[in-house]
Image 1 (cartoon, rainbow, N blue to C red):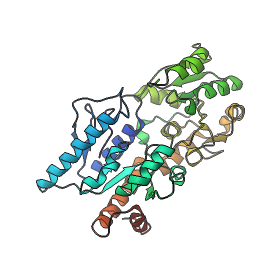
Image 2: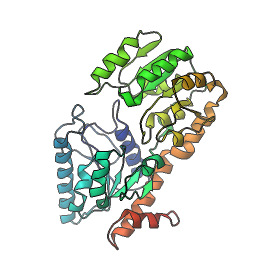
Image 3: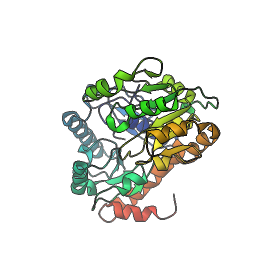
Length: 362
């Protein structure tokens, strides 16, 4: 399991990819697999943990220097293991791009989870290098946005462990928004919707490098400690309690969100989600059952008054059925087996693996 080099697994605060890796890795070990987790220093897991870099790089996310160094050292480790007769069967890569670009350098087949959106730049990258690994989307919306010539073998959503998220059927009056302080994530739109709904809003999440001006100009002026509170980056029990107690989670996104892990986490707590109908939101939120899909801030404010008609138990049950860690890990097991079958025969390709996946699940 190849994690990015930026943050420990699991993360102490923000870190959706690292949380996903932690859940899948732990469940694979629980199911009897021999797993080595290559991750940033400070990582903890039931799997064997290997730190190939001397330190984590939380303030230098997506710096090519550290990602390339991290992946190259892992690949050298894989070569050494093979030379000792201990070859790995599968590499499951969650890094940005270096692993995929250099996947043809190693003999181990690679499964690569697409954690980010397809953009003009990343689209060109995957058109050139995507055939070197088995690409897995985290939503149908993400897969459907793949550019021409990029084959995505399967869709496997991100998992949630319900034991990590307390179920709370009795809600307080506040609304919550949680994410990176980026314009596409919409904290300023959440502020407008909450104001129109007449409900207090709690904002949570990091201000990452490059987001300072947006936060200063579009968010900070509205923070008064009453109608709008900002609690910074949070994690663990603090995050879980905040989501569990909220009347609803607001997701006023204006981009092709590949998944939206915070929506699943809120629903696991029995907290409905009100989201703009963009990206994967329509796959996560069941309109009128676990939340509402709306078009703008005015409709979002109107939907706040209707969340009392939703059943918190339905929110949690729906998440358990579709995104539970056991179900997601079983899907990856099936994908690993299909990849191994294909890699021992014809040239590895997403199309061939997709054909194998159409057969009965192992």
